[in-house]
Figure 1: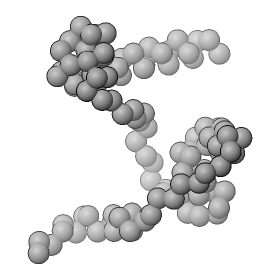
Figure 2 (figure 1 turned 180 degrees about the vertical axis):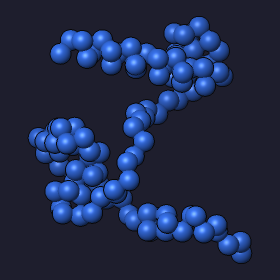
Figure 3 (figure 1 turned 180 degrees about the horizontal axis):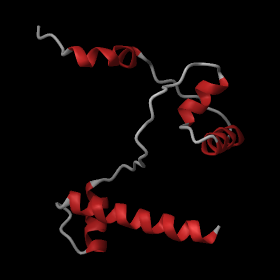
Figure 4 (figure 1 turned 90 degrees about the horizontal axis):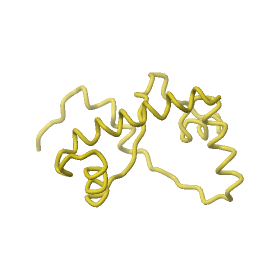
Length: 109
């Protein structure tokens, strides 16, 4: 059996952690999401704060995620005029569109 590099040992606790989903009514979901947004936290960190559990102290990369299927890449490729196989180019175009959205959205406030 191959030994793992020492730098990976810090993720041992995360590997053993179990993700728990809570089935709650829409009002609870909305309240937690709103609090997380206003506190600049992830929903997971907001729940951990509510439960007085520790949260990661190191900053997380600010990023947005979305799952894209092959059909989504087809649509986006047509939207941006690039082949759907050029996923990096599509990602760059989506990033630019998100930045433009944020700029427009900020001005409306």
